Length: 56
Image (cartoon, rainbow, N blue to C red):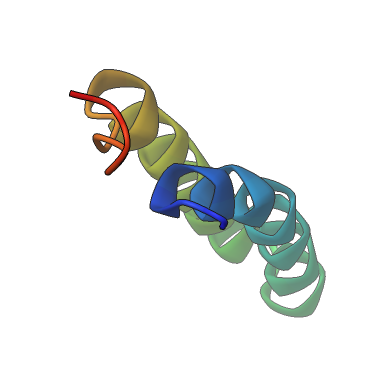
């Protein structure tokens, strides 16, 4: 079964690619926003990893 943590790690490239696409469509502000969102997700998961149900 895929955990929340695994799902977020799989989502990081999608967020980065989405930020790149938004940057192509809107210019520099969109690219910066996409990068900030990607870094926020990565930072949140690094410093606040969810607990797995099978680990105690």
